[in-house]
Image (cartoon, rainbow, N blue to C red; front, top):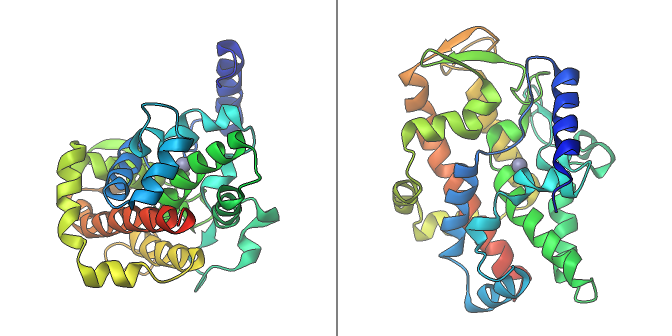
Length: 272
Ligand SMILES: [Zn+2]
C-alpha cells in the first residue's frame, strides 16, 4: 500500500520544507490508539466480532489496525490528513458545521465511513478501508487537541518545554503525557477499567459525534488555560512539569475510556 520509498522520502522532505522547524502531527500516538482499541475489542458483541474479523486481513486485530490511518493511510489515501481532526477555536462555545470546511474533517468523515460500512453493496475493499478509518477517527476525535485550536494548528505551533524537553502542545497530548504516565499498554487498560462503570457507560453511550467534539473542546480549553482560572491561553516558551501531568491524567483516562467504549458501540451497532 505504501508508495515507493523515494516518493515517500521526497514528500517528507517537502513537508519539512513547507512547515519549517515546527512539523505538524495529527495523531494520538500509537499508544493512545492501541489502548482505546484494546478497551473496544473487549466490548465487541459476537456479531460485530465476526463482521470485523471478516473485514480484517487474516491475523489482524482491531488493535493492530487502529494506527493504520497514521502509518499508511496518508500514503494510501493522499489528502486524508485533515480527516483526523477539526479545528474549533477555543473561544467558541461549541462545534458548528462551518468549522468543517468542505466536509473535510473528522466529524463528516466519521459519518461518511459509517455509511460505507453499512452499505452491503459497497465493494469489499471500500468497506475494509472504511473500517480502518472509522476505528482510527473515532479515537482521534477524543483527543482534545484534535479539536481545540488557538490559531496554532491544534497546539502544533505552540512550542513548549515538558520536563526539560522541547515539544509542542499537540504532541504532548498525542503521546508525551501518555508515555510519561505509563509506557505499558496493558497497565493503561487496567488504569482505565475502574471508569467502565454501568453509569459511565450508559452516559457515554448517548450523544452524537458533535457531542464528542464538544467534550474535546472543553478539555482543550482546560489544556490551554492552565492552571485553572488562567486568564490567557498557553503560549510558546511555556515550561510544564509534573503538575501538568497530574492535571492531565484524569482527562486522558476518561477520554481513552470513552473512545474505547464508543468505538465498541459503533461497531456493535453498525453490525447489528
Ligand atoms: Zn490520526
